[in-house]
Amino acid sequence: MPTIRDVAREAGVSIATISRLFNGSARVSEDTSKRVREVAERMGYWPNGAARSLITKRTHALGVLLPDLYGEFFSEIIRGIDLAARREGFHLVVSSSHSDPGELFAALQTMRGRIDGLIAMAPDIESPIVFEEAVTQFPTVLVNPGFETDRCASVAADNLTGALEMVRHLAALGHREIAFIAGPETNRDASQRLQGYHAGLRELGIEPSPELEVRGNFTEASGYEAARALLARGPRPAALFAANDSMAVGAMHALREAGLRVPEDVVVTGFDDIATSSYLAPRLTTVRVEPYRLGERAVQLLVAAMHGPASAPSCHELLPTSLVIRESSGAPLSAGRPMTPHPVFGA
Image (cartoon, rainbow, N blue to C red; front, side):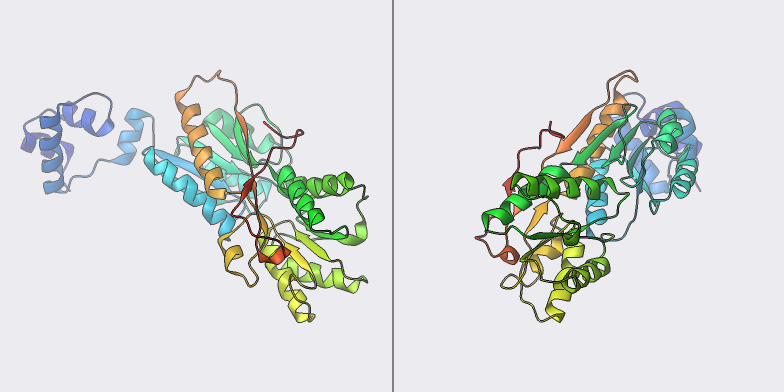
């Protein structure tokens, strides 16, 4: 393998010039830069990343920690992070925690010294303790965090307003008995969507009923079982609101098995607006979260934190959601209507 000395000799420049060029630490003339890069390419020279990191104190990599890597929602977050990171000259080191604090801590330990900054999505982690060390090691941005912290920036979707607007939409269609398939009890996204559902009912003068609520775990299978449980409890509700699209998909399958039609017999709505939602039959009315934008914005906040002073105040952003009306709610269609943030969480 050619060394930096070989390239310097062939290009007729000093080793320091080549080091400055590949480390980006100082300006090198355009002619010199072109000549060195042509020689390096011809000789097959590749800068030693580990050595370069020791010199520059940068790895040009961002760490990404998600609860899971499966499903359209998480893949869209990763896509948003990846494209935004590449625009800034970074590559990704990706891992999952499976919502387990122990695995989360182990992943953080593994990333030490390998990344310049961290993006972590931890809606199931109720305490920031596991992040205390990470925040001192490198700049950190949290996505939909399960806790409040002023030690780092965060970006989240306005879950409460999205759920509230969905209840308002169903009420405008004449529905008063609205069943809800909630997400995991320890998940903050799920809790906020349940709060929005309750707020919407109380706005109608209706007190939430435990008989109309079933918990799932954000999977299709849990939505299927939740819908079956609701049907077994007695008179079926006219409307069913699932806390995410995957559970709505499972619920629609259970309703079809029971010989019920959507939306003629039971209206079904979801949350997230994953790609599958617009290809169902009927297409799913849902709340658009734009996970791609969550990932993209997380990178932007992280880059700002990396370049800004350590004493700069942390930024906490709430991204708006929008209502996407399709056939499953039996209403006139719309491409997506932006929502005004709820005063409890609004910016």
